[in-house]
Image (cartoon, rainbow, N blue to C red; front, side):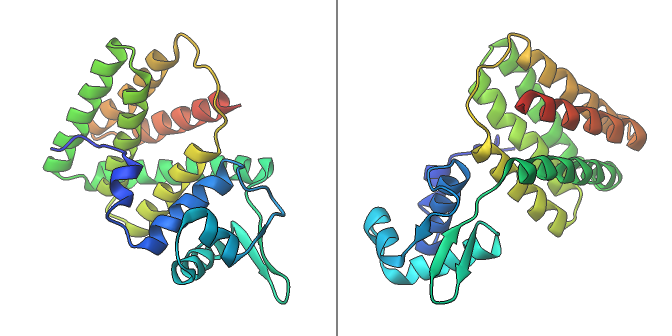
Length: 219
């Protein structure tokens, strides 16, 4: 297994220019660098991100499909972004989808996928002991991605992967409490044990508790 690495800069080098630009604009909108109501023009984006007009048009189309901008005829494109209510709703939807992903993944996970999940959890234990929050957050994302893959449902995997990106970039920086890593590890331990025991009921309960705890920690 190759341990999950979330390196946006490395990944972006292999993306088409329009997708790379879309990711940058998406991140800047979610982080509030582009304010709700701000007008976006092709020329200003070309100048700021050093690209031609063709990838800008494709990136704007993708942003509109994501609901992050709105194009008004004869006026142009305007940032919508996410309101606090949007984010609260997203957490609730993510919780429901994560629970469903666990149900399907426990039923459908392959032996190889289970080995990957076990190895990833062992890395979570290791970096918790090291008190390495950055590595732990990275592996935490990978743990969930493995569950999405093991659900063997492409639409669910796509939706949950998108939610991860939205929540990651929209979350405001804040100090982590002293017991943060231990809490997160134990929540994942309960999920992992449910996979080992092929216990769907325990898995869905553990994921529900983890999602509700994540929502509380984000406030």
